[in-house]
Length: 61
View 1: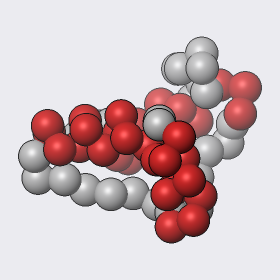
View 2: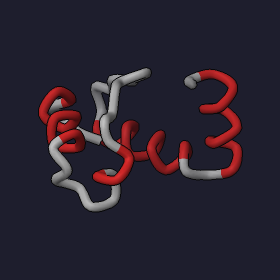
View 3: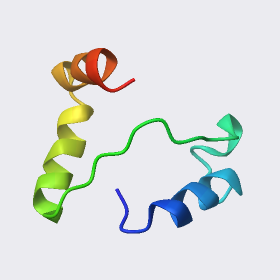
């Protein structure tokens, strides 16, 4: 989750995150914008759940 998507993608591709550095280069396939941070956080938690994984596989990527 970020307020600056371009900067976040640049950071991932620059290897600044140890969790994503080995999977470079990253490209953006889908993004979802929320006007409410609370809803964005809830959706992020949902995507990490079993049903969220199924939803993402079927609808997002």
